Length: 519
Image (tube, rainbow, N blue to C red; front, side, top):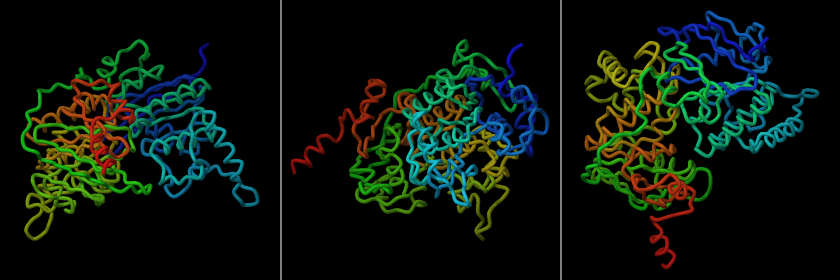
């Protein structure tokens, strides 16, 4: 007789207002395997895992662990059964230290006092064993997203969980951090842990997963062995059609300069050095310029300085011939659209309905507000419905859906719809495909190229090497706050790009630096 499955979810159905998120789904996880869960944005992957972790209760179906039926009413029940979860949007207390977050809820006490020394020893031992180096005394608000994710993983391991759920674990990581995470997952599997791994990225599934189950629009499509299945077959199962993985575009036809940045310097919030140092660049109408680099090399602060979210230390920004170096965010947004890096912090008001999020920067315009200052609700709703249909933004209740309740990918699609549809000369797109499935990524890339072909200037900031190599007309590499290289994607290689990103090569600004030294 075969050994029972580590976890078996049988005929699970979960409904929300206006939508069946999980429609009679059966999922079987073997002991000691990495089992990927693949599906489009809003396919029901996170919902299914939230049912397993006790965050939601299914209306129908049963969960079995090691062949025995179990009832999981809340995450405490899940933890008691050895089930842990790293959420897509981390569940960490920002003002607590790494160590405090790891032990939260399972603290050791003696005479009413916390026993932190034992906890610290166990955390340091776990971090050594699995290669998850962290500073236990650092506050969450001061560490990178990669470090926050390590904290979440250590939180699971500290509780001796044997079933590990990773929900979109690579959506916010750099390529280097992704490689490290893959290695950690392999080590956990070697230890006998069973892993459920939600992702949209087919390369990652090929790299670490043993089997993959595919969901589409809340329904179970099938389970296949990864080794025997091509990426094309998996993407076809996921979106129900063939997806073109190659970005097709005509050569750029450039016009006037739309954006000109001269010697821009932006301070760092983390240390005393400047995060952006004397950056100069131009973006013309009809071209896509990509700023590439390893995360944390000044790209975020550069975008903050450009969009008005942070003041400049020095330098000049000219947009459509006007000096906007000290202009307000609203006045900049009249000529500039911005898809932000952090969709929750800067892209959406999460507790607003979708329709209000669609008009965030335009609510005061005559199209949406009457002369007396009242919102035109009918026009707002019709506009939101139009964008949802055009950009395939899926939500349970359409325009009245609260943004927080939507899947991460559909939140991203809503922001892209709003920013692309706005009248603008410059589109600043920061990590626009983060958290999107292959079908949606294909759509965003086509949209960026359509923007370019319509005579707009596009400034793309991306950490995805495939995107950097395929979408832009020019690549500028940022390293330690400086532009160190300008590359033609048609003539360069991923290896050469990697050398610039690591600071091993530079071909722009070197003369300027030498002149400064001579002076």
